[in-house]
Amino acid sequence: MSRPLEEILFGNPRPQAQAAMRAVSVAAAALLLLLAAGVALRFHTAGQLDARFWEFFAWPTTWAFLATGLLGTLASAAMAAAIALALGLVLLLGRLAPLRLVRWPSIAVIEFLRGTPTLLLIYVCFLVLPQAGIKLSTYWMLTLPIGLSTAAVVAEVYRAGVLAVPRGQTDAARSLGMTEAQVFFLIVFPQALRYIVPALVAQLVIVVKDTTFGYVVTYGELMQNAKVLIANYHALVPVYLVVALLYCLVNYAISRASKQLGGPMH
Amino acid sequence: MGEVSKLLADYGPAFGQALLLTWKLTALSFVPGFLLGMVVTVLRLLPLPPLRFVLTVYVEIFRNIPSVALLIFIVFALPDLNVLIDYEPSVILTLMLVCSAFTADYLRAGINTIPGGQMEAALSLGMRPIRVIYSIVLPQALRAVVQPMTSLLIALMLSTSLASQVPFPGRELTALVSKIANDSAAGIPAFAVAAAMYVATGLLIAWAGATLEKKVRILR
Image 1 (tube, rainbow over the protein chains, first blue to last red):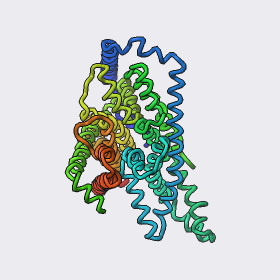
Image 2 (image 1 turned 60 degrees about the vertical axis):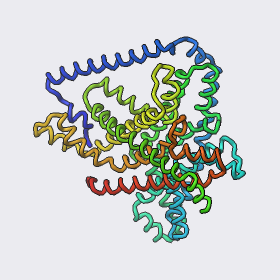
Image 3 (image 1 turned 60 degrees about the horizontal axis):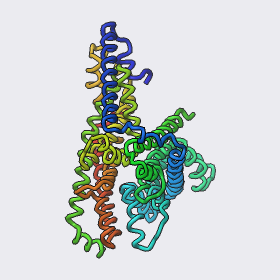
Image 4 (image 1 turned 90 degrees about the vertical axis):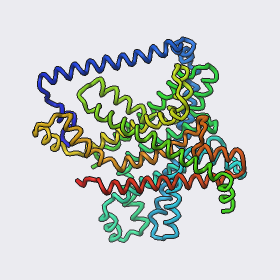
């Protein structure tokens, strides 16, 4: 599309329409400011703007503690992403295998991991596995379920990429005498990766969001550390607001990166 | 299999209720979330810069915030601001807000698939811009987003599991599994039954979405 829709629809308004648009804009801005003022007033009357609720954000220790939490979040997310990328490839190879005995179980595993909530898998690692005598550290109780459920999604993303590679590439590689493994790993998969990098990076946002469940298993990530801060200062609203903002910033940065990577390729 | 049948004898009705609650939460958050997302999409098209800015911030916030962080904020922090919302409406509100932000994002992408010539043609026929939006742009955008909306509905259905994070009188599937795992040693069969219910629901939604997609898609 050459021009964005907004410009086609409202690009060259008549003078009266222009004046009306400006008036409505000002009215909308006033209304939104009034809304913001109402929220601020609500904070004030509830006493949430008192200095004791906010002063500890001026202390470096608070930020050091939140940074530790954020590092915990990122450590778990990075490991989960690594598991997902590797296991996703294994599941993809199983999914594409010509042998039914390999293909059907792979499809079952993918559908199962994709179709169950990550939180349910976390509860299994947290509550059920210890009954069976398997004890994981809190880090793995959080990271392993996230990695597993993301792996299934990643396998499907990989598959979409592989199917997008033109068939002529496979035929040409085969006619050069490459083995099936060479065709896949040297020709098809590298090209597939280039198609799906934006989708993979976008998946990282979901991984970071899922690590929020860390407080369920009391792993020291951002949300868990926020709860500790709240227990110390009894400042629910400020701490949760700041933490939510931190999550939004991290995820927004990842989303932006994925949009950048999604630019023209050739 | 013996363990599963014993579990179903003990907890069968509870699982039925939990599944129904999961479906109910999904539907109650998807429908208003979808409508709100549509409203946000249309309002973002209007030439009102302040409104556009605020709605873009709205979409980015609720697309990027972890749902559970939002739920915990609504349930535990809002009472400090003298805003009291019951547990079940809190869960629905959380999922609805997140759903509306993703809907707005997908619909915008759907709008981008419509060739600009169509809008120019409609304008030159004398249609007003608002008329163009609801009789040319929206119908085509809606038909273009069936597939992403199906994935969103499945993701939303799985996200209802976060209702287990608030002390809810009713129990949905994940809360039920964690209760059974706490009370008895039947954790693994309980998990298997709940997982089967989630997977079946997801496949059902995916099938319905694919059928709808085949009916309404526009080949360009």
